[in-house]
Length: 297
Ligand SMILES: NC(=O)c1ccc[n+]([C@@H]2O[C@H](COP(=O)([O-])OP(=O)(O)OC[C@H]3O[C@@H](n4cnc5c(N)ncnc54)[C@H](O)[C@@H]3O)[C@@H](O)[C@H]2O)c1
Image (cartoon, rainbow, N blue to C red):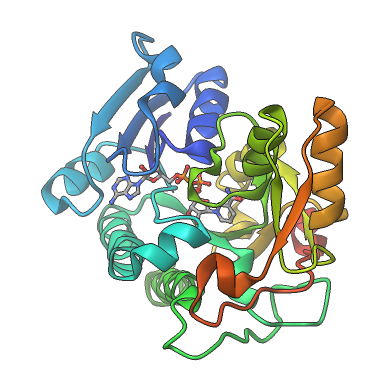
């Protein structure tokens, strides 16, 4: 099959490209290299079933042509990472929502299967764990830019489900929880590469808050396998599905593990969220997925 991966030079998208090439598909990656890196897909260059196009999903003429000629679309392009979102709020909202609008419009016009990744961030301040897809979503005030990411992704979800409702577009929305593995960069605030990078250099590991907040980390190889399966499973169309790992780790525990596994002499340094991000930043205590629905799918 011909498969288009927007954002395919990014962390998750490039692993998805590897997986789909391995399965025998013909892959087109469209990426503007804003947070993605050429080195993530360099090893695929020259492969007869791979092509890289450096451009933006906001280029409608190009997107129409690419969607028309493909069988499947994985829309992995997005503004990602808390730090980026705090620093570039306008670009975040525009890239996420406008990009998804363009992708869904052409997938709807040409009746293509499409996967829209969302995020556990949409659960916002929800305190009832594990997070289940039917739960209410609880975000903060609009003057706290931190919530722009969650709200833009929520709007993506509404739009995808609206296309399904109106025209039965074969679309699946997948809420990804923290995903980790090779090629992830700490540059935009992602915690695992940030900790490992500091530990290797024997520099202090910076924990935001008191470190007792917990997260669940899924390996990217498992995540891309799940993504590839969901788009081939018609029961998933018109659904919102959590995807991740359900084993919790505290951020302090994670920092200690990074130090232990690298044999580092680093110390752990605590800073408040406000010091890290300003803006009255709030974070969730726990973020645990219910995987019942993914299991059923
Ligand atoms: N990694 C995680 O832990 C995680 C968690 C929740 C959700 N997600 C979602 O998974 C998807 C992929 O995330 P990732 O971690 O691989 O991030 P990433 O930043 O590595 O990948 C995003 C890619 O999109 C590209 N991109 C951005 N704007 C673009 C545009 N206008 N046109 C074309 N390409 C553009 C970037 O260059 C990058 O390669 C995103 O939708 C993200 O919201 C990821």
